[in-house]
Image (cartoon, rainbow, N blue to C red; front, side, top):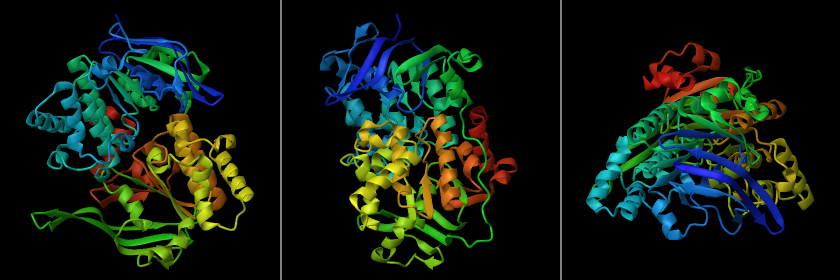
Length: 535
């Protein structure tokens, strides 16, 4: 008997008279101890299939016109809540794609991990705390064991993802559903986490359903692969067969798709549009009954940077290295010290009212599109919000025209502009976030992991789109990413950060072909060959 057996599964989403067929007659099985990778583009039905297993779709909006889902021979489709509660988080656990929206912002890390232990194991508080510490160490968060009262917003994207993995592993499940588990994680930690999951799978006999767009991960991790396209299972076979002799044209396209090319040349003689000297961002550490400052977290520690029109500066480094903090400081979204010049104008001392008119010229695309898009606004309202603030004289028709034009630019159907963010896949939401920034026609854009939630083929399209927009409008980019393949394809210059400092910087080709620092060599080795890091 298979551990999990799915037969003829279909899933529909209803919005009034409109019906979207998200999954269509999908059948596959997962054996005990097996790793099955489910791959496909955003919107192909991967996550909907995974959510169906635990009956987590929003009923009655979502419905299953057909299908059977059996776990250890027990039917889950339409099972009573008491049965599902005994399975969710206990026998079957799930790591969700977006940790910032999956973790409760009002609860500490300890409370969220311990909750799973209280519900399913009925552990005493002391035993639960010991298990929480053990789990955090297991996923490489030793330093967090001294900050168990930390909240999700106080952690980096990679740290939040590891907390999610710790929660999922708490009860040693028989099946772990991992929905893009390494999306927000840098390459060295990705290698460590994948090695960890593989070791746990071998040690406990746990099966893993791995949903990912990274085919390099699939080849190293999976026993079998299920390829989905537009809600259908188009290919299903052993991993080696899929990679050496794919039979379906869509699978062949996926294997061929990856970010390619090099950035277009820019004028090195023009003055920098963004310039910073000795930029520092220190966060105080308080202790004692009077909460006195005893030390500082040096998130950004004395960084100089120049970015010219038409240039892309890539910023790489592990989670918590200060990449995102550097970007927020440049845009004056957090307090910092040091000189910051935008377009020749000193802005580090400007008041909020004085800097507001400049906001339309410098934009940011955040890492987590679901967290940065308001769930209460339609796509059209989200994109036109900046137009209402910065271009109040535009008519309703002019705003709508600009919204439709920018949706076309980022590869989305303008007819979907009246839908809401939850009706889109992760990749589509990221394109909406890019459209929101680009509609204001800025001069400088910070892109914080803009392709991390996208599958390979869409990554390549977004990189091409960003290149075209840069060439057309002479845009300056600061591109923050842990994906060195993307950085190599789009960046003119690379800055390597560690613990708030720049450990190495230079032209992209030099950094990739002749890195000087051991840390840079480790990052590149992890990106190009995960086995190097595993040792």
